[in-house]
Image (cartoon, rainbow, N blue to C red; front, side, top):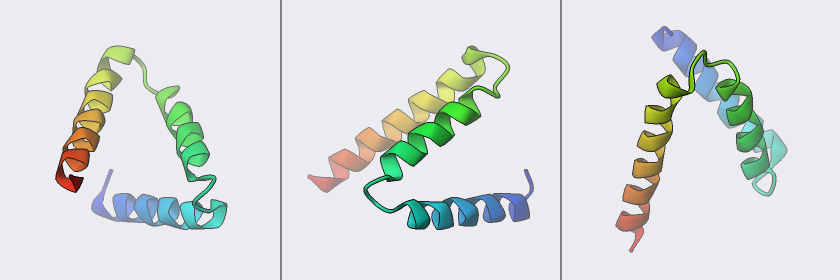
Length: 65
């Protein structure tokens, strides 16, 4: 993905989150993630990405304390 594609995708995600609202954001993100996951050819390629995201969330939670 090019830098322009990444920027366009990020902007579209932010705009979509604004449209669905804060209360529906977790549902929207879950649906989007499931849709994206279904496009990966193998689960083994996806697991490191989920582990990385989980670690980042744990790190962020540690910084909030």
